Length: 95
Image 1 (tube, rainbow, N blue to C red):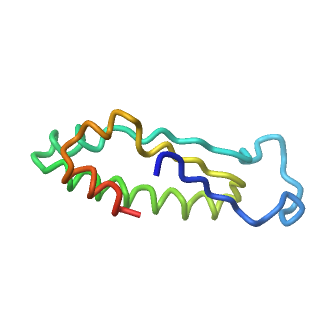
Image 2 (image 1 turned 90 degrees about the vertical axis):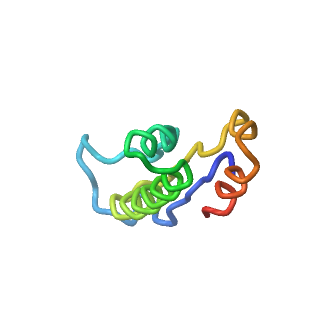
């Protein structure tokens, strides 16, 4: 779950010719802050992770709509293994 690549099956030839302000071919996102988001709202870290997962789903959908060829998400760092086992289990089951 460290890197979740998304490959859009459309090729540049599948789209009309785009201007210089075309969308990038590859977007990479480092996911961070679910715990801080939850704590700032008085919610559990688990709730923060679930809200973050929903944001990922929306991001993937939007990337497809925009014709992004590749979307890479860095979702789980080696530091995350130091979290409580129950939290790591939730993270592993989100997708």
